[in-house]
Image (cartoon, rainbow, N blue to C red; front, top):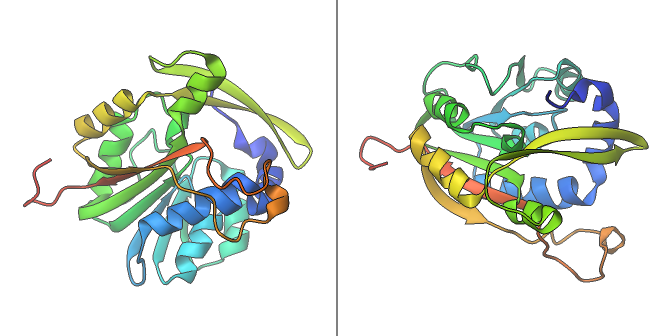
Length: 233
């Protein structure tokens, strides 16, 4: 059974707006890695309630987004209005977009909900234009190893977190670096780079567990590319 975000979408959205990991770590890093987006077609994969889509649109992108949670999409539409094309869709199924529709795609904390990455990456490759890039953030595989004292193998696990006073259980999948690399290769995408960034410069000190600590193991950021005809995969 997957995670049912409909049941805590409002609480998740409020928490996501200002917490350390989303507001001052994951989103700033994602925006930095996706780079220049003005007048580019960008797909926000698993867009949730729309905070990343909103910032991409503010930077001049033509943004489309989808999520599998109807309630998340409802909140995103309230936030974004007609500025972003939002659809209800599932990354584990064919996407409702034509081939070669996007210059770039972002997948914020999405892929660790999937046991199999290959088909999902192949579908993203289909909707990306040649040379288009996908920036994805996932739970860092070393974090699972440190907490669970095991590493190898694709393994399902649960994580319980409190969002604005409401407790929710998230069902996720651990993948090793080798699993990730192999899935990228099998999908036809090309691995460009891996990143373990610092938190944003404007992070309030009161959000830090240790004063002055700017780096920690939390998420891994992966940049992939749909190879152009002239680029070997």
